[in-house]
Amino acid sequence: MSIAEKTYPFTLSDAEWRERLTPEQYQVMRRHGTERPGSCALLHEKRQGRFTCAGCGQALFASDGKFESGTGWPSFGEPMEGSVETTTDRSYGMIRTEVHCSRCGSHLGHVFPDGPPPTGLRYCINGVAMDFKPA
Image (cartoon, rainbow, N blue to C red; front, top):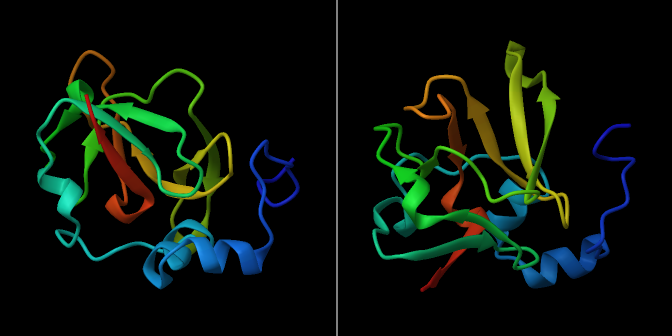
């Protein structure tokens, strides 16, 4: 089943998504876009807390798993259990693993196998797709 065919626990109409999200968030989260590297405030967020989906509020990543990857996007070693799902992304002549919110299906970013131990993964996430909730 593709992401477009799946029904998520949190669902809105396209008009409701457009009303809920900023134009940039809508482009990234609902149209699988990407923000400019280095452009989001969450890239430099260092406080303790949780990064949540800007679309539905689900907790996605704990701040203690965030690291500086040098890519220009917030990077994490692993998501909170059950918070994200992945699909194969074949756009732009590449094969990548797309990361989306398991609650609303919003596009968050991609995961790559070049992260630090212990997971060896780098969840490269668009900052506009997340909110930050301090601890």
